[in-house]
Image (cartoon, rainbow, N blue to C red; front, side, top):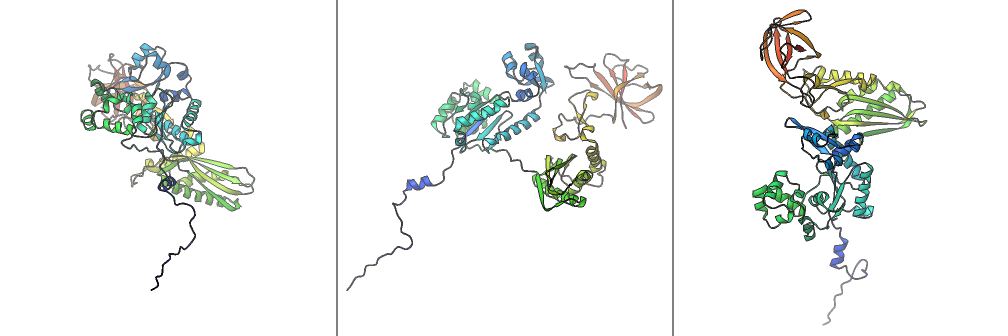
Length: 533
């Protein structure tokens, strides 16, 4: 019996070399980039932002002030004021007693936040992952891109040089977690401070151990409670169970501690990229007829409105650029008093200006961009919408584009208790959402306010807290049938421009209603301040 040995033949190409080891296979697979967070703290952000346009903010002790609990307090200071003894939340009167030549300016947190977001977008040149961290700090995730700048310290140095050119002081720290970077940026000894890479490692624990508990981004009340128990350093929290810390001091404490050590993930929300608000159209043959320019503009407006609808925005200022064959571009700028993204309304604004376009030998390309865009709040229109619903806005748009929006003003609220000081004049193109402060609700005010208040004679003299029975204005007598009041109004204590007033809403025999007041302390001085409808 003959035994046949079966031979397994290999098909395909023959392999060469030794097989890949498990370690080699692991190294060939893509690895996750270690997380490296660069925290940038701007300790004098509100005052240094104003110092770019206010010379006195650079040369003298400077502070921003805000109203709190009926008095003016210090909101932020510059380095000169801090060295002189002025600190945040100090009453303005106490600060002036310490530094008589202190220069103050109203605080505007909304503008601070908006400009800080612009600064964050400027920092995108270093990494695409930039987030705003509170009112005066930024987070940059530089993992995987630091080598492009020569390393982490070189990247931090380049960023610091850029901030110095902008006139901004900064402290920086790099760590594996946002919480650790935030803590080291404020309380680290070096600038910048570079912590160990591994999150959750013993090295990172040692770096954070000697920092104060305030470095964990805790509320001031929690920090004071921890200090009262002798837990003023982070290392004192390591031996206490998280459950016990949460029960005694709130569960925000163990969460912040675990986030700083890397035991609990803390995601960063980077800035939303600014989507381009520009549309273009190129023509196979140059166009020169007016109807062709109008049709091309209508098509561009349709494309732009669809783009704005996806972003939830409306255009406030648009620019149409016509590129001619001879290389001389022409541009038209159109503004609107409110955000718009309806093609017919926008086309009506351009219709009056398209006659200014001189095509020359022809236009080969047109571009339309929304230079200023704001969010649009959708609302259901009804049959009661009149001038306020669209006709008034359309009239303002036409007047503004024909004569200039700088010649049209609208009333804006001002921070004053006096009626004549509570109204200011603002630009028609200014964002209505940015108008601060807002007029308080629940106050009855006349439709027509006299400026200045008109002196009237009241007889007989009413007693304290009593409304007038009759008054004479411009030689005509008016009998008061009913009255409400008094409403006591006085100016801010730091202004002292007029004595306190007692206002009365008086109704005459003919049904007309008046807004009268007398100055406190002098029953003989009566004024007419307004007339109701």
